[in-house]
View (cartoon, rainbow, N blue to C red):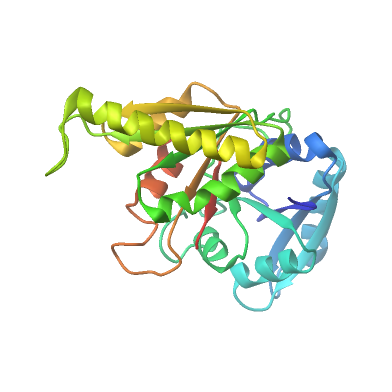
Length: 270
């Protein structure tokens, strides 16, 4: 599925937290890993190059330094496009120390502009770049019954196969039910059939081990709680390419999970 993993860095410990996940994924199939230090025009390019090359050497990766003459997101996308089947794996928080997975951020612009899924992680500032690699064992795909959420099924299953991981399909049920729909156990039973059939279908068509579960409560809280117990998890979720308020990453379930789940999120803007 991917023939290179590209990790954009800005020199901060926040951006370096993605390295534990990227090195873990690279180790599964010996996928080449490239660390990319992006600097603004006029910055100390020599210092930035020395930094990224030293960091890359510690992780068995290649280090490159690129001067952004325009938008940083475009610079990242141009580098990714230079090698077909590149997975961009980046943090949503950088030098500013501010949460950047919001409208107008570099991470979101990369997700919206990419032709393939992008792996995004919200760092905590507590993990060291020199920490051990994180092995990914589970890909969790939340579905809400809409065609939009199911768009991510193909990418999630392919990613699970590439990573040598299990695919788990989940559906969150509001115990109160929705207008015109049954509530409580009857609704949960209906959703169990839906999520089980989707999991079975994806497992058979892509040759990956599958599991499924029905969660209860608020979507963000339920998904975050479900994945928080295992650090070997990646969430696979779809977002929207356009920036309208109702479809923006800001405030959406995807953004809420990125903020609260504590695991990387594989995102795709269809």
